[in-house]
Length: 313
Image (cartoon, rainbow, N blue to C red; front, side, top):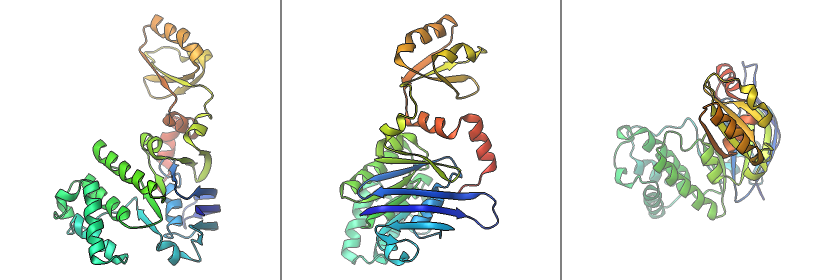
């Protein structure tokens, strides 16, 4: 059974000329982690909310765990759990209150709810703060409360919409560990994130969305093949004419003071010797998912233009 099956899903918000989603079709296998990548306003959160029965699509069909997400929304809701992008814990409630009460609302018996609450709070390093009101906790700990609520539930499909935003590196890895354990139990996850290392660490498959459309999908290995070269060289500009490096590969403007060149290993020696001759500093590294993403959705200037014109959906 598929975790998610979307066929021609589109969404247009009233009063807005821009389409949030346009003819999105994809399938997500059960027991895997699917990650949606896209810049702000690309349509990731809109898609998650439609899957989680929080929004109706303007057109198209979508099934979640074998049920029609529109006609059988109640059945879908019993099988899923979600960390919403804009969610916030209640100020006066403690981490224990949030998780324990949520489990009881979902139908767990008191003893089971207590055991599950204790377990997830320990996993996410919230147990020592379990009795402190959320208003007295850091932003990162508040975010972990939402993650704890979602992951404590015995759901078949977990929606994580930027779950580690605002978390420190240690806390992020605690969440990653819990996500991996969830997957080992045979459950499914749909993740959105802006952290490329998070996507590379967790994802079985990745879908890249831009301007409401799916522009690429596949495993990380498959997506890397969209860039034919296998190495990246970052070179300090220092007022040098970038045309001198054009013959070595594809040039991407990565900032005001740096150029990025996608090249092959066979060209590295000559390229770096030229950089040294011109007294330019440089670094050499393998092609990453971040490189793939930027090459597909556009460089620095395109990102600035998109950010200025788009709302966050």
